[in-house]
Length: 84
Image (tube, rainbow, N blue to C red; front, side, top):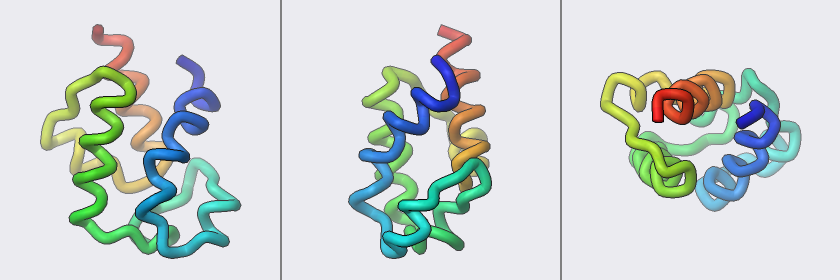
């Protein structure tokens, strides 16, 4: 799955938790979920659970801790999909 396809599938998962709509509209690889989108850490867990369901993958705790921005999240999703 391409990076662009993953980001398009990721946006509706992240959107309900976003507190900074302007940053969300300008989402890039370097967008940080906590700093830029003002998503709290408890909601990040919800996002990871939704990602697991949407992409049919399992994300371990070590990977989850790295999923703080779009670029890392896409890379982890691609790695998990490739390992299936």
